[in-house]
Image (cartoon, rainbow, N blue to C red; front, side, top):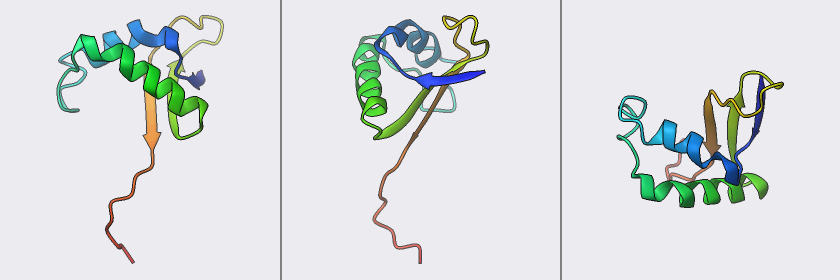
Length: 83
């Protein structure tokens, strides 16, 4: 298995994942297709700048075009003092 940064070539993988009503049922519902290119560009920029951890899951390194999903981690401040 390989985790690699999201890239501009991942648009179709994002469409399959994030526009799918079943896959996105517990994540706020499917995203509109027309927003996907901008989302991929933003997430690729964030990954390249090390602002967020936006990765694609490649199950077999010998088949880099086969994507099993994605992992996105980012930090944010809630303004809550948890101490």
